[in-house]
Every structure is written in structure tokens, then in C-alpha cells.
Length: 180
Image 1: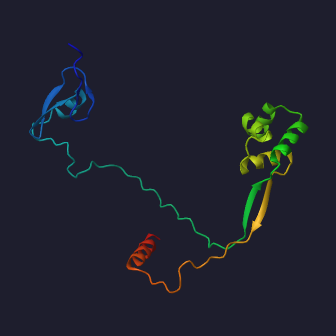
Image 2: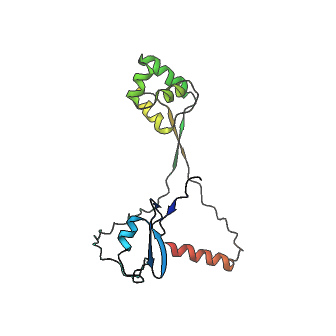
Image 3: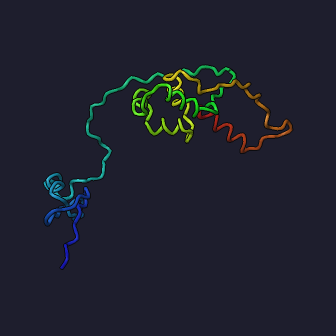
């Protein structure tokens, strides 16, 4: 005969080692582990309920001062700046590395980029992120990021003037307003 199927405690769900204990809880006979037997076995049958009764044990609570809400500044329309990596970034980084006369290992420690990232950028296998480009610019004193100014797009009226809102539109608007 194979291994006996393990039995599990009907209160906590832990596997039962040995025969286990049968106790009565609210008129039902249940099989429990040693720990639950110690906890609930000494109670008179039918008097103990594992279901919460609504009374909570007295707990010490520590009140935390309310966190101040961040003040939102009014949004002002300002021109958008887009930052782009220059097209010949690979050449610039590669030449800067050659001029430094240092190994990729030394440079990776000093700049704060991995050797693989540094090599991939220098050989043009991948474009650096803006954060990486800033590190390289600062270390080598080269220009890798171009910023161009764009005028903010005028907000166009998307709803035609003759449009009448439906009840659904009004309900959605009300729901959105309530969230604020």
C-alpha cells in the first residue's frame, strides 16, 4: 500500500502530523492539528465559534497626522521642448573614448554606464537614452542632445456647434465632476 494521503487541519489548513484531534465546534466535529487543538480543544463543546462575532479585541491604535495634500499650481501654456539625440552620436562618443585613452572598463566605472552599454552606444548599435546621453555629455564635454522648441498646439474645438448632448453624455460629465 502506498503513502497515506496527508490530512489537513479543518481550521487553519496546515498538514496534520500523526492522527490529529477530533473536536466539536458549534455542534460540528472537525479534525484539527496540534496547534488548533491546544487553542480550541479546551473549550466546552458548542460554546466556541471561529466565526467573527463583531467584537474585536482591544487594539492599541496610533493615529498618524493627516498628510498635507500637494498644492497644484495653475498650468501655464509654455512652449514644448523636445530633446533628441544627435544623429552622429556614435561617432562623437567613439572619438571621445579614443581621445580619453582609457579602457571601456575604466570609463564604465567613471561614467556610471555598463561596459556593454558604452560599447553599444559608441559602435552605433543602439541610441543612448536622454539620461545616458547626459552622463556622456557631462563626462566627455561633448554635445549629444539637441533641444528644439515647438509652439504649443492650439486647442481645437472638437465638438460641432450644432451638437446636442445626449443623456449619456450628461451622465458621464456628472460622474467625471464628482471624482474631483
